[in-house]
Length: 431
Ligand SMILES: *Cc1c(COP(=O)(O)O)cnc(C)c1O
Ligand SMILES: [Zn+2]
Image (cartoon, rainbow, N blue to C red; front, top):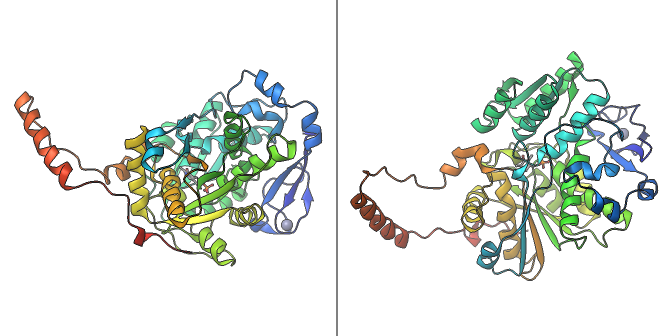
């Protein structure tokens, strides 16, 4: 991997070669998250916008010269990436905006953005001869890890909080993973997976612990920039749990800036739930990350101690990013608004980006005439329970036209008496 310069610890700055370390900095322990540094000069020697345009591969592997894998390593057959970037006119008009886009990463093979990270992670697992792979996850990372492992025939062991939504558990079991539902939180499952990795010699995909996941996640930014013909948007909204997608989005744009393919880094706004806002709190108060129990309907962004928190904070300060926290009620309302105005079905965490945009508009952090992109990170079918909690299930009717007419009449009456709302300004937290 001559295009890779080093793995650098974000705590102490020590540098390592990929052969020297597998996960975190030996001197700093789990806090010593490693960042992949590239030799952009070398990469630019045979990677250009032109070679990219000529490449018929639409998956994330079209960006392979910017990924931390051996040029000849086999990759999983599941098609990851090339998620659509939609102009969403009806949503745009509803919000009174000029230029609004939604990038729907729920369109990945296991229906979340996590596939981008898992695809790169599984190639690293194969490169180091792993026999069994493992991870802890709130659900989506595990589902995508299990899917990638199944596509390559690697046994997979998963630790999830036992409260993970059924859809995500179903994916794990259908992919044939060995599943340990943990009586505890995501943070408990995370620690347990690391212990099991040390004990049993498995290959671990825990977020931030494994240095290669940010590299997979950054492909969403590379792709977005390419889809926008290298004219980056003004603002990108990103749902945030561990902060790995957030750092991935920054990293993708930093890569492109380093190559001279784009002129600036967009303003990145990370969105958390008020019930899981450790990163938002640390950023807003300029204080160290400090654990707080998480409780939110957006299970994919529930993290009591964001695993990639240090790197995410560094990126936010370095590139003038921002964080906003929104109440669960607004996340659920955003899920409905997105569905009704675009036909895109997001899981709660994925709809948080829209809730974040609403909050940012109210605060004057973004203007209606800016070019805005919302990242939708996971599909709503993963968590049907949350979706159903925001709607009213209609009563069954007799199979007659009269019954339809009566039902239509009843509906008109209820519609006019209860208009769906999008939260109130009182519930929006002020900085
Ligand atoms: C994992 C996940 C997130 C948050 O990503 P982090 O890297 O943990 O910040 C957001 N949305 C969905 C759907 C996810 O699965
Ligand atoms: Zn270190």
